[in-house]
Length: 157
Image 1 (cartoon, rainbow, N blue to C red):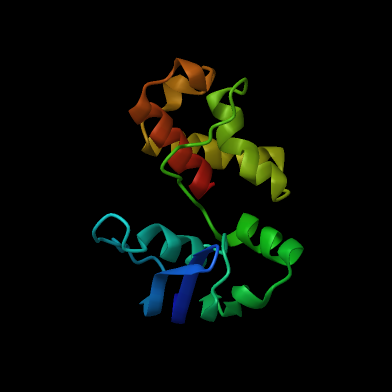
Image 2 (image 1 turned 90 degrees about the horizontal axis):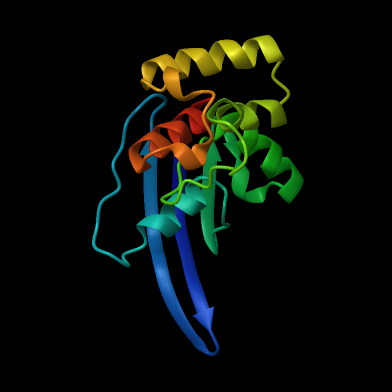
């Protein structure tokens, strides 16, 4: 389960403070699909960054799988994210110069998965996302939609 309790986050510029998230509570059960919707500038990206552990709340708590991530050290949080959090960014951040297969496998390599397990997971994801025929291509050869599917596979692996 993913849970945010009393989340607050503000950005500062000089003496001015700009609140982005004010007292948000959210609970997402395991395997649920949730859409965060709202007007531009209302704090959606800030909320997602807090929930993924990419940013820390000014107030409140973030819990994933029973662990409070907002209190973790940076190194512990990085390890936790590699094992439990998959992120597809608005800009895909695929590694140019690597093949589609290598881009998908990258987080799994960092998490210490075996080569056999990586290939199995990669091939299953590629089949589900209809990108099997792209695995040997460079990411610079792909359309935007294809790059998005590679980014999704990389987040899920």
